[in-house]
Image (tube, rainbow over all chains, first blue to last red; front, side, top):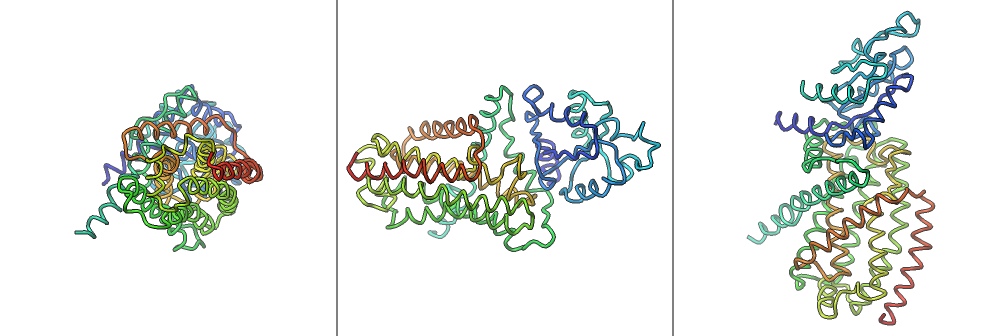
Length: 138
Length: 306
């Protein structure tokens, strides 16, 4: 039973894109990996429109006071088990935005993050590598 | 003994399990052909089965404030009706004597149950986008059902006024498939386009338009309930082309039917991949004015025996 569950999750991770105040660079790279050139449907990865259908949340952007409740809500709405993949330097650590009054720290203080993919923005190859590593870790 | 056979035919062959397995395989063909048209590689053959297994074993969330009974009744209706439809199609093709008066009308109602399941589920899930999707599904159902019924009337008229499914197939065996006449072609085109709309494939994927209303009626569904919707869609993808073949292309109780079936599947996928999505009012106009007038023309032609 557990094996079947793991196999299904590994072979068809549907991703939901949580854009939490990004500068849009990482989002464009995420859309890039869905294009025919990188074609992640080879691995069963499909972009879905509703967190209810998702197995992996791709979070991008700097976490701040305004969007923390929204991110938590989306995480709560996602059926478990689900992966959280932090894409981009801002999602891994609030780096240059650290001193801002509005920024309240990285995502892993609030939700369990499985993979960090740094880069500003990360290359599509790096994102695919990160997802593969996340699936191997399961 | 008899009850065991009936249960076997409903659950294993050609009912739920058989049509679900074949239907999921057909959704793989759909995704693969789509990928090749996009110049991509596409998913491996086991992809739909992996999706289905994953959804079965995932958590199912019931949204707060939704109607629990209706929320699960919606997905169930489609699966049950499509299993019964598969059993009826197979038994009437391979054994036309098992047909009874008015079974074509029963099939029309069974085909209506799948969209009704989607409407019920979408309305029960307490989400604004789901209700928009449910209302669009309802409008679209009324749109394609009118020309679809006219096309069935053409077929009935050509079969000599018989509403027994078995008699329609026997009539085609006697005089050749209805497709090889002018009104038969019109009936086939109309049924093919309504099939496209019943499957909510691209020119008519208005109810679940991904870019506008996310997944429409399915937006709140997760886990087993979503898997049921997916498998309903897959089974429809299996049964509706068979329905088309048995109505106008001489039944599927021979080996040629596999080629015919694949031809219709690929035609549906090509229509899906080469068209933009219509708006709901455009779809209504297309079905009631364009296709509706065409089907009435076909009815007149069939009346004069063309």
